[in-house]
Image: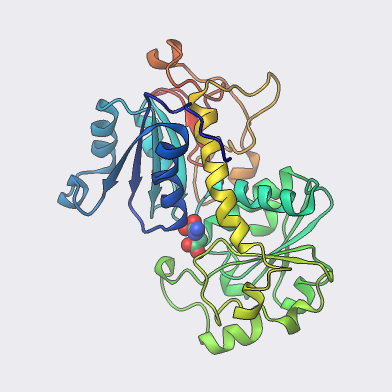
Amino acid sequence: MTRKHSSLRGRTLINLFFENSTRTRTSFRAWPAKRLGGDVINMSVGTSSIKKGETLIDTAMTLNAMHPDVLVVRHADSGAVHLLAEKVNCSVINAGDGTHEHPTQALLDALTIRRRLGRGLEGLTVAICGDIAHSRVARSNIHLMAIMGARVRAVAPPTLIPAGLERMGVEIHHDMERGLADVDIIMMLRLQTERMKGSFVPSIREYYRLYGLDYEKLKVAKPDALIMHPGPMNRGVEIASEVADDIDRSLIREQVEMGVAVRMACLDALVSAQVAPVGKEPVIHIRDERADDPHNLQKCPLARPGKRSRRARRGVGRGWTGGRGGSTGLHRRGPGGC
Ligand code: NCD
C-alpha cells in the first residue's frame, strides 16, 4: 500500500496494548493516521486507570463512551479481547490475546508467502516449529493455513505441544529431521518465557542443539524452502543468525512489511462497510466459547447473524456482516450482538 487513502478520515482508532509489542503496535500506531487519515489515540496502560485496579469491563465501558470507531486490543489473557468486544459497540481488532490467537499475524504470514511464491498456499507443507504451546501466532496460522489449503506440521518437544493439537488437523513431530523433511515453509517461534509457568526445556543450549534452525537441519527441507519468524527473534536460541539473515531463504523482513499492509487493509475493511459476500464467511472469524480449547475452535459455526447496534443500523463503521462473536478476529457488532 503506497498511495494515501482517506478511508479512516473522521474516524477514531484507539490502541489499547496491555502487553509489549513492537511490530504490531507500530503498524497500528503511525500508519492508520499517515496512510488512511484517521485519528489515533494510544492508551498507555501504565498511566491509565487500569493500573489503579479498574477492571477490563470498566475500561471497555469508558472507552465505548468515547465513541471510537475501532479498538485495537492486545492482552495477556486468552479470551480478554472477546470479553471486551462484547461490551462495546465499535469494531474490535484482536492484536493478540494470551496464548490464544493473533489473527492479523496469520493474515500477514499468508500474504507474505503468496507474494513470494506468486501463487496460493494450496498443497504447501508448512512446519511450525518451537514453542507452540504458548504461541497465539501458531494457533491463528494453523486455522488460516488449513483454510487456504496448506498442510501444517507442528515440530516441538512434547513439553511445548499443547494438549489436543492433533484435533486441529496438525501432524505432530518431536524431531526436526522428520518434521522438516520436504517442507516448503518453516515458521520458527520464540520460546515465550513470559507466558510460561515453570520450566519447559532443560537448557537453552540443549534446545538450540535439538530445535534451533541452522543450515544443517535445513538440509532435509525442500531445496527452496522459505523461512519465517513473527519476531521478536532470539538468535542462537530458536534460529541461527545466518539462516535468519539469508536473503534468499528468509522472509522475515517481508513479514514486517506485509504487517503494515494487512493491518491497513483490515482497518479499511472495517470502516468502509465492506461485507462478506452472501454465503461466504469472513476468513478469520472463528467463534470460541473457551478460548483455550482448540477442539472447540474448530467446531465453531461460521457466519451467523448478530443483532445490529444502533450505530451499525445507521451504517456507522459497518464492517463484516454476520457480526460473529469470538475474540479471534475482526469484530463489527454492537453489544449483545451475538
Ligand atoms: C508475536 C506475539 O506477540 O505473539 N509477535 C508479534 O506479534 N510480532 C510472537 C512472539 O511474541 O513471539
